[in-house]
Image (cartoon, rainbow, N blue to C red; front, side, top):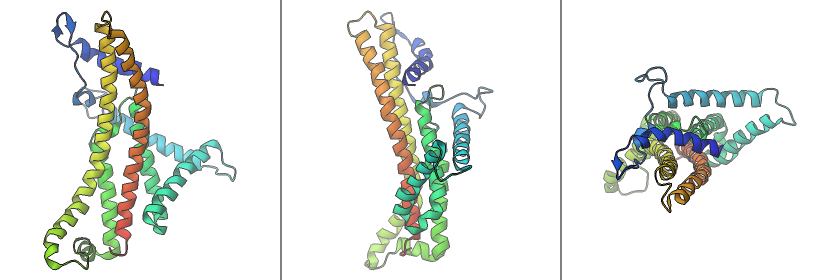
Length: 280
């Protein structure tokens, strides 16, 4: 898989490298930029149906089919697919929902398991040959997920306590001198209502964007050295090393992609747990 990843990545950047300006008879190296995350429409150049949207559709279908097949004809002695589905769901239910929320976390476990699975497969798409782009590196997708989690934890807190009491307990915790509220109240409101969804969105987007950019840099740099500095004493060895590092980083990036799916899910659970806490 990693070999195919390098070959496919090389093909995607080949056009950019060969179109660079010349310098001493050699093509100049053009490092990857944010433009490498922009894709034309699949059916028309300016169309809305781009590769990241296709990946989201494919991965959404994959998650749905996976859980349907895993839960169909469930047996006491599970099949491999049932065992895989139960393992993912059981981990999120026990180690995320119940730990972060408490006994009420059981009713949020399906949402949290779906959220984790959706983010994980869309992140992993960044190291799958042909797909080769994490759709979550485009800010629109993490934004929608962050808004969804934001609506859920605010709605839960308001439903439990009412609008006035929820925001009152959030902004004016008891036992604090009244003058301090002038500073504390807006900070609490801003951090809970504005900062939380922003941090959810930006953490996921920037991690996926930066990781994919680094992979592109190693692949395109190795290609450039092998194509244009093959006669140089360090051209071939450093080019090969760059490709090797792209393989290592692909494995490392896979771990980061799963970790970011877990972090997003855990923070969502913590925010829900905070909305359900007695002080709220």
